[in-house]
Length: 113
Image 1 (cartoon, rainbow, N blue to C red):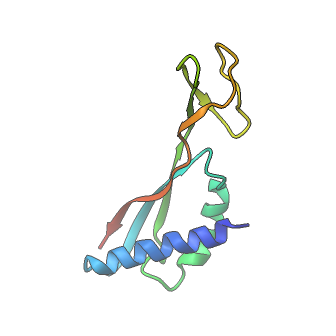
Image 2 (image 1 turned 45 degrees about the vertical axis):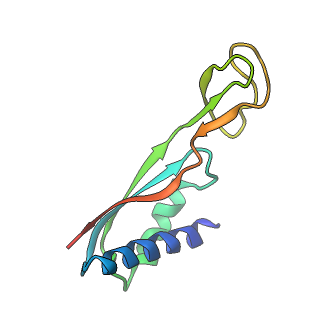
Image 3 (image 1 turned 90 degrees about the vertical axis):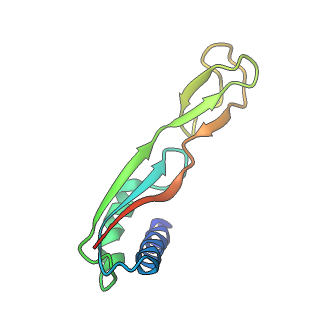
């Protein structure tokens, strides 16, 4: 479960950023998690309360924005929604779709008191 380490990193980033801007308490943190990132949003949500205990994020709300996967066909240029098991273009059948979106994993926004 690498989500525990990822969640600790999210808390560290948010806490450090809040301190750098003079914040005393983080009330919410918004993260983007792409469908192709290999990270399970439910597991991050499960770990968040434990990881934020005793930090500036203690009691903060975690908002997860899911980013769907998007790929482009190298032959015909068609863009289509993809997951980790998508390899072929839905139109021409070419293999090796280029990943355009869905690998995101980032802290997007903080609300700080």
